[in-house]
Length: 225
Image (tube, rainbow, N blue to C red; front, side):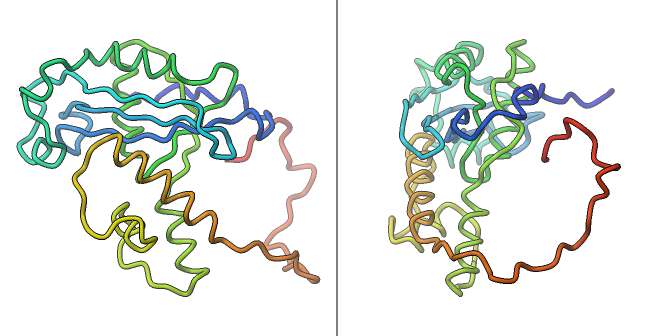
């Protein structure tokens, strides 16, 4: 069986300017870590423009199949049948999520280890027959935090949201995994480190290129991946 691949929502938008981008800061909770056998139990999103100005937010508890929720996943996310009594079907949640995104924009998923969220969301959109609404690029807090440790001369002892937020002084200790709280913490931690990256003037003698591309080998319309 050929593995399913999510449609590339941003492929036709490859040449849009940066002002046509928006960011969807996402955090999902799951019944476990394997998207093939576990369900999404919670979704939170904060939508911003490319300057991190907030455009909207939403949060959903998702009606999941009991057999696809592991004991450890339930413990970490706080899932219980009572707390999820009014949860919405996944099709409704994904439809409302897609409708929340700004029309005419290339929407890039952003978050902490957001590739995990993307794996579950890609499968969910595909299973529900709903067009995948996000671009194929992602923006991840862990990469920014690691880059900051290099600039600041610090040692990255972990790449977790908790480590990045504790180092930033935004929290003091471990906090429970909850979708909207984690989404908000991720965005605020990202803002913290962006504000502490120092721009430097261009070098007088830029480093030599590692390689040169022969113009004859350059394919027209090739996007930067």
